[in-house]
Each structure stands twice: as structure tokens, then as C-alpha cells.
Image (cartoon, rainbow, N blue to C red):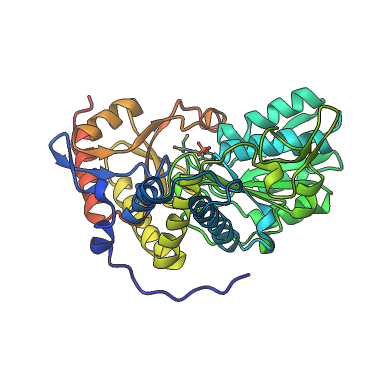
Length: 413
Ligand code: C6P
């Protein structure tokens, strides 16, 4: 485990200046962006990195020997090393670039699934999962004759760990859980989950989509078999993400996609596959966005996860306390350990209407099921209003949301 970093409080007002998109009016009001769990805004350094690549050294990588190709290859591979450090993976060969968490889970479900799943095996997912950590497993289960089992969720929005224990058996081949829930913010005890799953001989994939921008991640300490993240939820571009996998497993897994880059030699009779990580990176990758992801990692590291988390925790605590006092508000998701996400309902109003009325005042939240329909079913609701905070958000912005919600609440019959 890496030591808890000491930190300086961040100067949020000057940090906000790094995000050009924040400086605008929406529907006649200064923008309040509280949809960070869907995607965060991007700092200038990330945007500039895309401009620099396309205007300075756009070239395909790993192929050319010319100067631009070498420069692009170097920058691309530097992100791999940064991502390795970010996750504390042991080796750069364990870092696979993908489009995002969705592709990462599909890759593992398809390739690793084929390798380990046998009829009668069980895949254990949690009731807190995003559809992208459910559906690929359902597809794999259906194709390979395995069964899906579910870890139930408590009223507070935590995983029921006793039930988890009861569902583990020698049939459990794989456990797939998120590090943090996108709908409720719950932080899951992933290290404990990995330890218990391994005790039964099961492998574990952790979906880190909602953790990467907020929590320290140490895949070696966690001992998970796979970990995935999406760049766009951690101040980076869309269309790029990382799959970490233990080398010993990745080496044995069959390729996910065939094409250029992932091969050593091709004849019509037989193809031999490239070494890690390229075996899983068929075709020309998303070069520009991988390079820009490095700037997103640098942004997080420059500010420090400890300082980011401290600020976001303050915002979450403040928002929760104030929300509870708005007449008609019901909080959904009150776990003890959370990232900066708060879902709620306003009694008698559809979440969509609340979202639209907030938008009319320049406040961006997400409404709906957040791609977690089974979780919404668990609470007997169709969806929620979700406010999710990032490092650039402020108490003043929360005050504006509360003021708007009080006004909306007073409109109810
Ligand atoms: N959640 C949200 O508003 P992609 O789309 O592949 O980058 O990430 C999918 C995904 C997987 N797991 C979790 C926990 C997620 O939160 C997400 C994306 C967004 O909550 C868009 S639905």
C-alpha cells in the first residue's frame, strides 16, 4: 500500500481557470457542471496536447522509422508508463489501451471468458453494476453455459457482504464489481472482495470508471486480476481507456480482435500473435487521445489524489447536508464510504423534470437510470437526479443548486 500523501489545500478558483468550458453562461446563467460522473471537463493541458499532436507530429505508431512516427510512438508509450505508475502495475506489458471501461470488460468477458468459463460455472456481479459490467458477462455466460449470480445491495446502497460470502462457492469462476458506484457513489471494499474471491479460486475484475479520478489505485495491493478505467471520467479525452491485467493471465488469453499490430507473422495457414501488450491492441490505436491521457494523469498527479479527495469530500458532505433540508428531497445512496456522487428524488416530480428545471438555471445534472437499471429496480424507482462533483466544483455552485431546488420544490402541488 502506498503511504497516505500529505497535501496542501487546492486553490480551486485558480484551478478552475484551467478548464475553459466552465467559463460560460448556459440559459442565461453561469454554468454549474455537476455531471462529472458522466464525463469530466478537460483542462487546457489535455486539449493542447491534442492540438500539438495533430498540428505537430501526427503519424502512425510502431510502424514508421521516420522522425514523426518515432516521436508519436514515444509519446504514446510514455502514456503506457504513466498509466502503469498511476495504477501501480508491475509491468508496462500489463497496460492495454482500449476505448474505455465498456471495451475493457467486453475484452475480458470475451477472451478470458472463453479461456476459463465452463458450463455450470458462476459469474458473480454486484447489484451496483453499470450495464457495461453486466451485459458482457451475460453474453459470455449465455455463450459458454455459465450462470450469473448477484451480490445484493442494502437500503443504504452498500454491498451486502454477508450475502456475498454466501454466494461464493467452488462454482464461482469470476467476480466483477465496481470500485465505486456511478449511481450512488458507494465505494466498495474491493481488496476484501478480491481476497475472499481468490480464497474460492475465482478471478476478479474491478471496474474503476468512477474511482480513477478520486481514489488511490494500487492494483498490486488490491491483487485484482483485471482493473479498468475510462480516460474521459478522469479529465482525459473520450474514446480512450486502460485495461490492466495480470501478465500471467494476459499471456494465456486468446486475442480479442484480429488485425494489424497484434500479429508477429501471418500466413494463410497460421498466424502467430504479438507480445504483450500489442496482442490486445489490434489496428491503429487512438493515438492522439492516448497521448492526451498522459496530460490527464499529470493533472491529477499535479494536484494530488489526497487533496482532490479532501475537496470533493467536503463538497459531498456539504451538498448532502443541504439537500436533506430541501422539502420533498429523498436521498438515494447513503453509504458510509462514497465518492462525490449524490443521487436524489424530489417527491411528486419526475427526475427528468427536475433535471430540465435545473438546466434552465444553467445547472447540469444527470437524470434517469444512469445505465444501472437493476439497481433502480432494487430501489423500486425508475431513476434519480444525480449530482456528481469534480475537483473544480465549489460550495457556491452547490448553493445555487439548492436554491434552484428549493424553488422547484415550492412548485409542487
Ligand atoms: N458511466 C455515467 O453517467 P464508458 O462509457 O465505457 O466510458 O464507461 C462505462 C461505465 C462503466 N462503469 C461505470 C461504473 C460507469 O460509471 C460507466 C459510465 C456514465 O454514469 C455514463 S453511463
